[in-house]
Image (cartoon, rainbow, N blue to C red):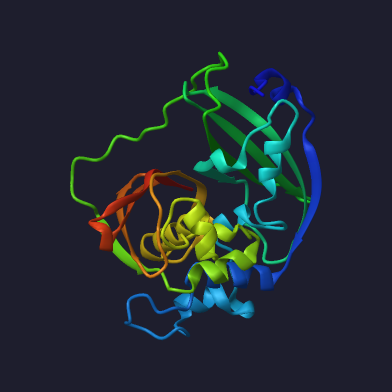
Length: 290
């Protein structure tokens, strides 16, 4: 059945209550490689890593917003009125989070989720699923997931914006490498994304991969951690928003190369997989700063 964009956009938002505690935050950070001693220059108990793993020093990486409460619960928007798609044709095309204030280590919030936009790309559709969270003190974050659905275009809708960033014509200001542990997808999935594509070799083969792949949102979180640690001195409160476009897969055991350009109020980032000739992983990626 073709996508009915008007019906999807007019549907009432879905509401839910979510909670999280320091254990959820610590598990998420561990799933991103926190404490894994990425550059071999300091132990896992280095103060820079303990702020991700020790409850008495804990702060919350803003990308935690993508898993808080229910993991990938926002994907429920794919069952909204007017949208009937084959999940096998669905790809996570991009992600943006906007922080209204720092995320507390313990929290209870109300979330609302809706289809914010539907774009017709011809041979595919792009559905923007928006999730907003607020607690008793006001708004916490807004999260937009851009879902690419193959074979669902051609319904006559708007094509939508092209979110491409101009690449600076100079070398990176900073470059770091971050190894992906062989078991990292198995740990990251405990934060809520149970898709067997990231754990079951047989299921991965059905998806066209010779082995399980890392979650795109794990790469997303690892990249933000690299920027926070390298450019911001560990200060998560300076992150105002974080946007990316997923351009390729990562396999556990590979190494991410994170290249950064710094400018006033923003860090622009490109991420590649080192062992596959710097194959693109994340593009059009920017961390916006306060």
